[in-house]
Image 1 (cartoon, rainbow, N blue to C red):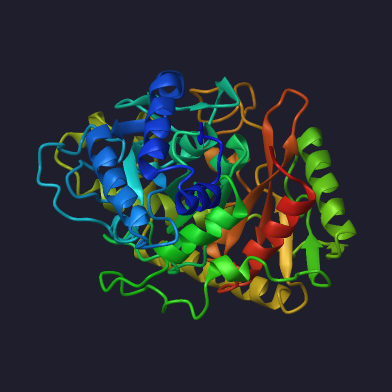
Image 2 (cartoon, rainbow, N blue to C red):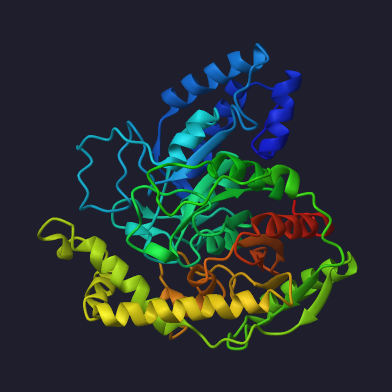
Length: 458
């Protein structure tokens, strides 16, 4: 049985009946990596021996009727931003010594192990996850499984490409300005940036209030299951939220018909590719036909990019200032520019940008007293030529210029999910973004589930 296109939920159901074993599923995932990753470059590390060892242990648990979690034995990957005991965490950088001791698991890695998931390896990231595409001088260019001439997006592009290509059913990415949702949209998978603090982080990210971790999967149900695993508390993150009071795997089936959704095609300031706009509009109409009340309106804020640029660049500068002497000549040239730009700001500048971030959060909080969710395109364009930070010939200067639907909701710390909405005429996926009030991860997942039901994604 070839399971590389099964969802994690379907895999676990097959484990329970004995139709499939975790060892077979892991072997199939490893075979897919061997066959496809030479072209796609989603993985920077694969450990087949350890993966099969974990799969054999899971197989015994299922055989004995004692699985240790809802995802026991499911093949998964983690972005190379999370500390992982026994594996180097190089974060796409030549400036990090791979020979040092790697004896700590991040909260994300620890929760995956505790719940019996099979860790296949680590996925690619741009250096320090700094941009909206995935390439670096250490591991090269990560490509889109739907068209390898195009980018997978980023910075969790390796995770998105791995899931989309059947090289593991699940992955965990990070999102500081759209880094889960951008590649989810480009690669045609589901990617959730949950409420800030919903998933504990350690060590603390220098990008501070912008930084989130989140699940990436081929279905909304799988996304909810993985969020249940990742939401457990960890004392190493003092900003982490309390454990959820109910499970996301149950909340995802909440009936959302009758709720009010604001549909903002442009946020009031974004130029959107006409084909992307039409695909998202059609998907929103499908939600309306299914019983969601749709009102076309904008939330009422102007582009917060100037404040985001300060928060993002100062975080990068703080992190890079801890790197060894001489690193400035070794890091990605684009990242070096961000480093230098971040050093131009004062503490007062940072606090001012943070105040703008808080004001935006208050504005969106008031908006959600009138609208249950906000729906937008995830990215205003489809995937473009791989190996470029911005679409060639576009005339724009940096990745935030083509991701204006994502970074505002890192600033507000709201949950936001990208769900496949359709394909362009050339076959490239297009994502629809659903944003909810802070702490409404269950609602965002439930609306995403409704979209998945009315617009099935093959």
